[in-house]
Image (cartoon, rainbow, N blue to C red):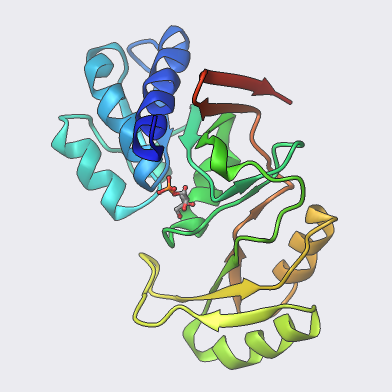
Length: 223
Ligand code: 5RP
């Protein structure tokens, strides 16, 4: 199976995985990216079994609505049963790097509200140590250079993601060259930089369940 087929397989599996958890009042949190899109397309088949979804990006909201799934503002939702999203890297503790698609801040907010975070990846995303994939950091535009200098002081090489403005009107620095052996500590250190909105490390709120698409089937790993 190629990478697209693995993403489709894991997207289908995630829809199957959450189906028994859903009832007519359930709201599902939905992530962003090509793997999340496969999940959305599979979820559409069970659209009648739950109330609606909260989207982690404008693109996801559009895709959900295209399938006739009601999209709710998070402010109007009391409880999110489950959040399903992809990742750029995942380590054995189910800590993640996310934000390759630039939706990290809303993804982090929706994940923080959800009772359960189901992460869906193909096997190429599994690593022992996070950081080979450049860590996305969402930054208030006027603080771009000052934040970049502080990221250099942490040992990273920040690269401005040219031409990208997030759904929140901010910019992204992709930080290369980090070997993130203590993800919670790195998350704290970057969050403490003035001008940072958020960063793509999901260590303090890791995934609860990982579904991995492999050539021999979808593997389930639980924390
Ligand atoms: C978007 C994300 C995505 O989940 C991550 O980039 C993985 O994307 P894909 O499923 O397309 O490989 O964090 O901000």
